[in-house]
Length: 174
Image 1: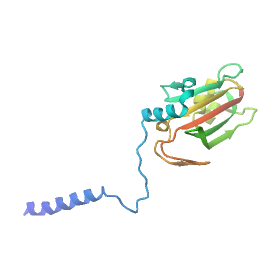
Image 2: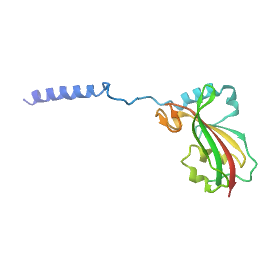
Image 3: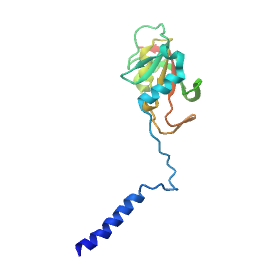
């Protein structure tokens, strides 16, 4: 009697688990696979092409950066430094820089320290690499930020988008 009971139960459980794998037409969730860092690097390398040798790839942080202007200020920026800066974030596309996705201007005089801006994408990474008056460009692989999640802000960030940020450090106070 026990075997007769478990056979239908096992069949129903198997059928339920298999139907869980079927696509539900009411499911609006788009599933995607995030790029690997290697795939991101291939995409970035093909987009920036001849400029590739002007960028440095930071293996520890998995970011590309290029110092456009090192600046002329005194000393390095630290987390305790008061900073004023501006930046523009864009999608990296076949023309190099595309749609603006984010921007911010913190006007001089500097009133907040760098650690206050830790929530901003790569600010705490980029600004210590330059001095007052300097400029830096950072390329962020999708695998290091949003992956295959679509994000919305100023404009839509498609899944697996590589992003390029340009920072200008306008004021530093210690």
